[in-house]
Amino acid sequence: MVRLGISLQKIYRIGNLKFDQEDVQVGEKETGELRHILHIPAESKVFIAGSTHAGEEKIILSAYGKLILTYPDLFLLLAPRNPGRADEVKRLAQSAGFDTYKRTELPGLPENNKAQLVVLDTLGELSKLYALATVAFVGGSLVPERGHNVLEVAAHARPALFGPHIEDFKEVATALIKRGGGYMVNNEDELVAALRLILADSSQAQKAGGMAFQVIEENRGAVSRAVDLISESIGEQGFAGRNYS
Image (tube, rainbow, N blue to C red):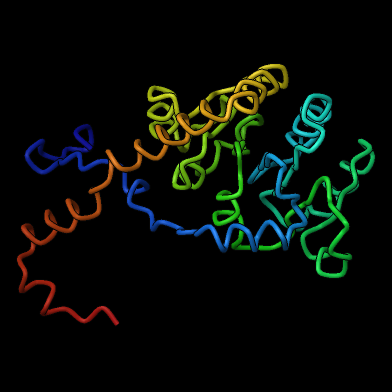
């Protein structure tokens, strides 16, 4: 902005608007209902890989195959960024030997049919489903897609994992790493190691999730600061005198 000729007196650093995202509240009753809908056994830990891109699912599935040797009841919810890839991702999972269903196939299954892996092929559910996670990986980050919103995981006080390609969320990811609420993994081996660390110690998972949520709490307020600055600049009458319909 300075190089463009804007005066320093007219430039304000108000913080990151993303921290002021609306909270998605999921209570204990709804959590139980969602687990039932997704056929997740009550005792199972849940690994969610959200907003994944081509190339990441193979890494996730390979890591999952190693983890279930230690945690045979570990449930994987795999959510491709583009739901149109759900059939492709389902075939990958089945080829890897996993009992796999798409989210939209679950209503037709008997209640006693416990899925091992579900591919999310619907829109608008993922941010809420992160509430079910023991730990979550946010995609677009192990491949060069600039990353996706890790705050959707942190908002539910869950530890967030992500790859090195987080250009669109660098500030947020750095804050999570610094506070111990987020983990950067550069490859499959590091992903498996981070998941083992969290899955092996429920108190560590809760602590990391708490730190992730605290990052959000400590950085809220950018929206109100922006509104205050705009109000000061144009005056309260400026809002009243305009038609924004």
